[in-house]
Amino acid sequence: MDEKKKGKLQILVIILMILLLVATFVLFFIGKYMLAFILFGIFMLILNFISSWKNLDNADYVYRKIHKSNQKW
Image 1 (cartoon, rainbow, N blue to C red):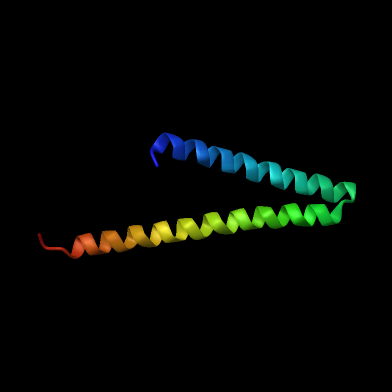
Image 2 (cartoon, one colour; image 1 turned 90 degrees about the horizontal axis):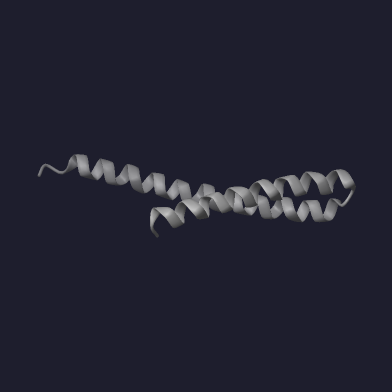
């Protein structure tokens, strides 16, 4: 995936997460607890997916740096 598409995807996900969080709080204060709970669950799933993905990226980056520094040639 090229950097331009990746940047647009990141912006869309950030906007989606902000909207989900705002909608959750609004629905909670209106009194729609079940719907707010469902939206917050979706928010947490997205957050968990992103954090797991970044953890794998960081672990791969560290592994490659260590492996590259151990090569003599």
